Length: 350
Image (cartoon, rainbow, N blue to C red):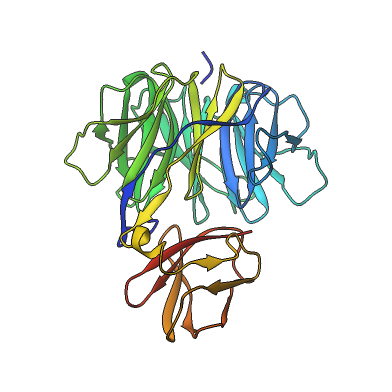
């Protein structure tokens, strides 16, 4: 078998919507990575392709790399360098996504053991070694990166995701998700987060919600990472066709389906405390926008702040009736405009 803080102070619920095909006709997709509107797809023993998620669906792909890759799974981006794992070649490679496509990969580190998930934290690239039963890490600034063991004794580590200092790990053969604190003395030991899963190999997070793809269960489940451990899961969507990688952009959860040879999505947009009330009172337009936002039904000057989906404040100021908010400096993605009196509105920069 082939081996893989959003604004928590004002978010309250997650609502699941129907599943939609995003792109079909792929070659066994096992890796997903979102960069703005570009969704990169690892087509397992083939290539990396990408799609524009704003295009009419279902859409078509553009080749990012040449073909002949061996077991593309995990991704991580540093500047313009897209790092990716090649499980069946036991190595990590990279490409410059700004070069003429399709690009030819450069090897970063070889001699690994069935590498799967990747997570970058500063200069440290964390690596899930499926056959090596461990998480290791390398310094990507080193001219000759040498792996250091982070945690050993795992059983089929595949997808990994870092939330704060906590690294969550899918252990496929143990049918569980475990975690470690990356600031602990290394090598460290793992703690069980949730057990009784059905071959978990994909992870994505939204605030305190951790989404898990259960390959053999043909479903996506989720847990609350703040719950007492080990915790239990809630089903998000069932009836999938061997789901592998996940990617979340603040509105939609993208799902790679291995035997379905496609990427699908479901809406899991966060709702703010006052969003339903606000919807009939104050609106942003145009939304999406690539330059300026106007606020309808604004009668007085209001202080505001703009946050990204990780809860980081990016912009602040005051807006009077009939004025505009300049968002040109923001990169493409999902953001939240929060007024000091409490109302919050989600918008998209494109």
